[in-house]
Length: 205
Image 1 (cartoon, rainbow, N blue to C red):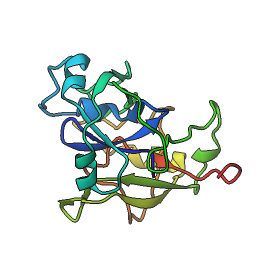
Image 2: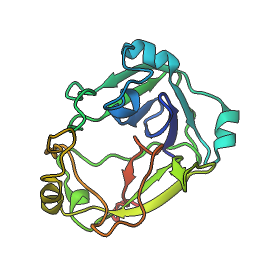
Image 3: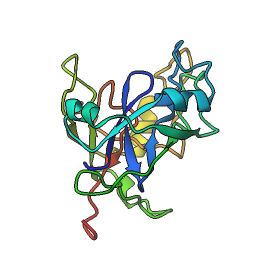
C-alpha cells in the first residue's frame, strides 16, 4: 500500500496519494460530523496550516521520523455538510502538499478507474481497506489492512431505511457504495477514515 497516507488533523486518519503532491481523503477527516471540534470554526487555509501528512512507511514511528509533509491547500466537496449527521454525501476532500514527493517503491500513487467505469462496484468484488487506526482499543503502530467485499447496493439501501440518526434516515446517494457483509467480520475502525478501498485490476495488475 505505497499510496497510504497518515493524516493528523482532528486525530489520526488516512488518505491515498494521487500523483506526487495530492492526497485524497474524506471531508469528515477535515471537518468531523456532529460534534464540536478543533476545525469547526477554521477556514480551509487555517486547517491546512495545522494539518500534518505522513507518507512512505508502514511503521508509525518511521513515519514520524521521516517528518510531516506540509500542506499548501485543501479542498472540501461543496455538497459536504458537517452539521448534517445523517448525510455523508460529498464526503471527500483533496489535500495539496506544498512540495512534491519523490516517488519510488515505498511511495506510489493509487490508480483511479476511468470515469464511468462501474466494474469495481459490483457486489462481491473484493477490496482492501488499510490504515493506522484503532485495533482492540489501541492505535496501531503499523499499517493494517483487511479484505472487504463490495456489498449489494439495493440490500444496503434497504438495510439503512429506518436506521435513524437524530430522527432522520441516513442518506445513501448515487455517489456512494457500500462494502462489507451483513454478518460483520473484518472492517475499518476509528483512525482509518479517509483511506481508500483498493481493488486489484486483473487486466493491469
